[in-house]
Structure formats: C-alpha cells, structure tokens
Image (cartoon, rainbow, N blue to C red):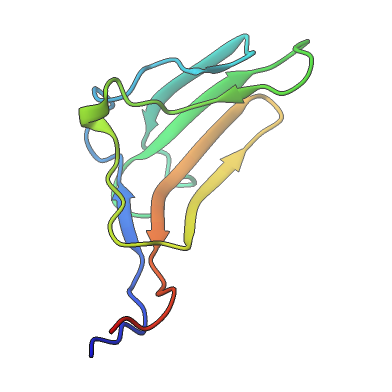
Length: 114
C-alpha cells in the first residue's frame, strides 16, 4: 500500500529566463496589459527575476483582466500530480503595475491510495 502524506511545494515557473514562450500582451477588456521581467529586489522572492505585469483598466466597465498567456499548447505549464492548492505571490499598485513573485503549487493528497 502506498500512502502519500504530502509533497513539498513545487515551483512551476521561475521566470529566470525570458518570456519568449508567453504573449507580451494578453487579457480581457483592458487598455494596457504588458508582461515583462523585473529584477527589483522588492518583487523577486526566489532567484534573480520575477514576472512584471503592467495593466490599465481605466474606464472599462465590468470585469477586466491582465493575463500571462502561453504562445501555444506546447508551452503550457504541466502541473504534476493532483494538486488541491495553487498560489502566486502578487504585489500590485493602484498605478497598474503588478509583479508575480513566482508561480508555485502545492500537491496535497486527496486520500491515501491503495
């Protein structure tokens, strides 16, 4: 019988390279949505770089969004196991500048498997 008590968090995207596998602009109902890399220590939690997402929803009615979108299915992030939680540290400002520290997920067992 295999019993899995839990697994440590896994970094799914560390943003340590470039953003070539992502669209520079993606979102819904926005004036501006630009993804780039930042090196600012206030935003980098692990490594030397973090995602920077600049956005502007000024004057847009209803729901808006700024996304980091893969350029094609081959660049989708594969999530191992059966995670029940995912997290992304995010710092945003009223000026429309956000920085995602890292994208991580934690896999926790749904139940012991036989």
